[in-house]
Length: 258
Ligand code: GLP
Image 1 (spheres, rainbow, N blue to C red):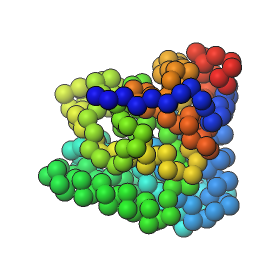
Image 2: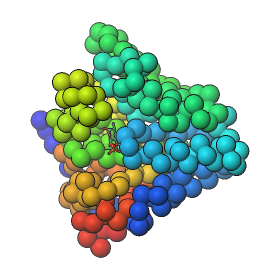
Image 3: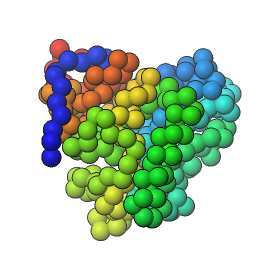
């Protein structure tokens, strides 16, 4: 495997807040401000437990303050493969349950995990990229970070110019998903994910991490060389990116990196 590296330069800024609730307030405020200022904003969204508090707050802003998503378009980062969109394990289902059943956003897309041939998968991936481009490109991409350093399902080794494609999941990623699938054997080995290049094309990136379990990978991503063995490190080179952390996730980050 060839490895791409850059240097340690970082354009992105780091925000550290006391706890998960404050972290979610911070990120929600940014997304709500964007949707308010640009009613037809294009959002890139993430799954995992980290953004759940943001989705709940956005839904409550919609219900309480009338935050309007009627002209917004959303693209999710990834989906397991193979995966039926209607399965309770699908990211499609996750987004429906946690956000889209609760807001008025008519256009939302999740990569398609239905099993099919290689050529058809490649075609669907190109379509996903084309749909993002046709929407005008992503205004704000929300990211979590996996313990392997992944963003979306771009595992170590994903190059910075990668686009939406079929990927193989890291053993740690499958292990982390085992409980929710009722055992490691049930966790798919592959996924369809936007690429690092797709993510870096977004006009703004907000990466969230919460809890002590993320402290070590946050430290690697933000203090070691920018390199494809820690995919999240590429976010540092984006001209308009923020890393938003609670104190537990930031606990191993030297003060000069904050
Ligand atoms: C999954 C998703 C990622 C997410 C990661 C972290 O692997 N594909 O987009 O960032 O989980 O999940 P959590 O927020 O639950 O730690």
